[in-house]
Image 1 (cartoon, rainbow, N blue to C red):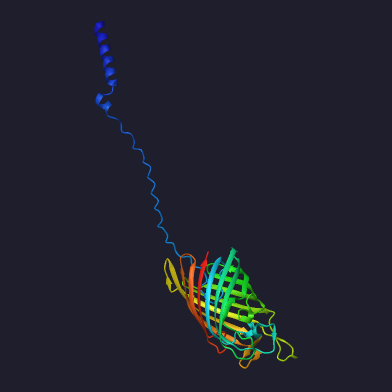
Image 2 (image 1 turned 90 degrees about the vertical axis):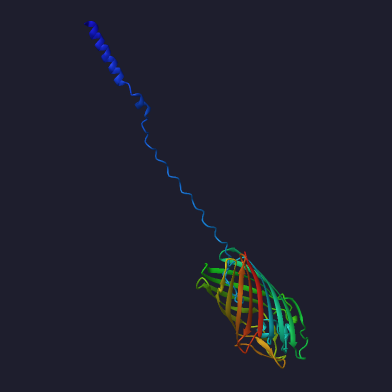
Length: 340
């Protein structure tokens, strides 16, 4: 009996051990691991499309009015003027009295002329620049009375050098208001028709306003004030009068960008430029001299500027007097400008 009880106990223990062991098939089944969250891949940044390299267009489009923009630039300009009947008027173009320091009579001349200008401007600051202009002039008189020698012959040489400063009261991409002060130095030979034989100071106010993406308006107002000048005696015993005189200058120039491409732009511009002579003298036919005070001159200028290749531009234009009093009847101008 004891043996039987022991046998039952052993069978019970054996069954208990078997029940506690995992089934072989079950042990082979692996409990699935929870799926790991995959980090979302960062979206590839799309490279922005390459911007077209557009031409840098400087602010000023005018060809006769002084530009208001303050910038570092070089400029080469050539003028060809025809039929200048009063070149000694107020000694604005060249010296009266045949270039002498004083005289008793005058020689009236009519001439054609050409002038080549080399201009450099340097702007160390956004609102300040200095400039120097060196001109070379050629004259061809075609009417010279026999009286009042020495006569003027065709020739050329350096004319009156100019230097000055520009101050920008307003300097933005849409508007410029600039004050300019220039000085003329008598480096040209007045006897040869190449200079005025006196110093001058020229204060000016220059303005630029962009009206739209394609249109702009520019203007100037100033005065040429002589320092010194030739003395004229009506008779040997009369009091002297100064040949030189103040000349005021005004101008407006609207422009419209007709062609706008990535590499070049073409901008026609129409300018009206006026002068008012406050004083001084001028020679008239008959070898006599009379006052030039009160004379008004108005010129119309039509041209276009081609801007290209990062700061380069070429202007070509034609000017003609629309009043009976003139500096010249016709003037052709071509200019190359590079802005740094």
